[in-house]
Length: 215
Figure 1 (cartoon, rainbow, N blue to C red):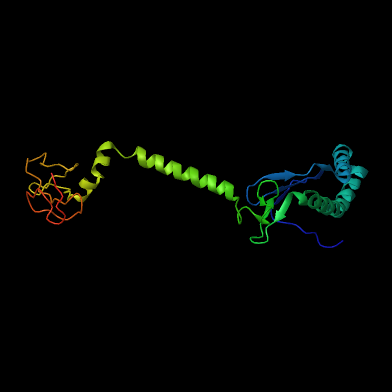
Figure 2 (cartoon, helix red, strand yellow):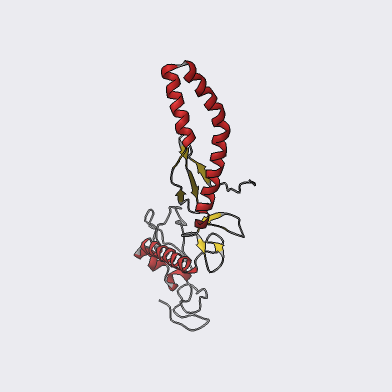
């Protein structure tokens, strides 16, 4: 018998009573388990162990001989069961030629591209996920923006100079106030034309650049 081909994504659940193996997808973790295959040698060994514990003597000697035979014969049977399990479950897995991972054919294989979905995701799924993510981002952006903040983002307010603190007492200003709430000092801010953005001279009613009337 030649070498047994195997992969890393399996668990050996075999016992002295029989053989069973479990294989898992490297990508999603989905598992496939072979049905338990009872071992005739394991049942005979168990019977000898029981007889040995009850009667000793000749039965004990038989049990010892059985144990020595079991070690070689059981391993041979185990290899055969493992090889059969590989052949049984191999159709459910495919190896990606790009990343070499073994993935389940049912959920993690892109048939059209001949690659695993880790290397070649389903475009429809990715588009739906991207759209949902963008929608969630927009929901958060709009829900966190208060009406007062929206007013500050208007073009005329954005272009106007905004001071973060009072120039007289240096108290912090939470809004674009005209007077300081702490000392009452007038907040001197630069004015800009709402049309072209040019800085206006103090008390100017019209823009010297484009002639637009400014409040």
